[in-house]
Length: 125
Image 1: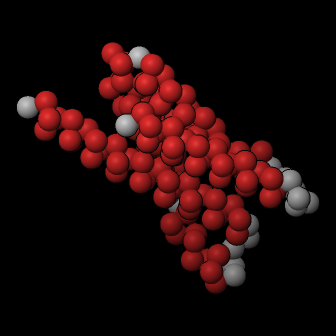
Image 2: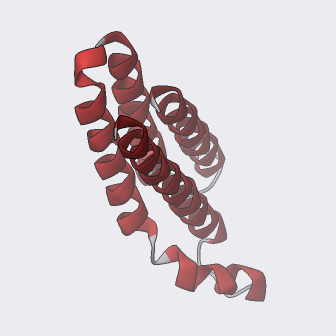
């Protein structure tokens, strides 16, 4: 699970940096484009520490899932807004797409984390 945390964190960092690079070319750049990268850095750090500290792995991976859950809950509204991007009515379509991508990345990480916890419990029994 720590490796998965690092991979998904890297995806969020990439998303945040690419979103920020795009908004820097617009008339009104915003630092909020880096929000996915912040979540990503936290996931990467938790994954790296979990690899190094075997005795803390379970707690750190639970913390990583909480971070992903917060990321998902913070971007869940993008599921309603994504249709406006395709309809051409979105005010900031790149922001909506970035939020939607963040929500999907976080949701997949949550699903994989829950599956990992269930598998670990089954193997322990």
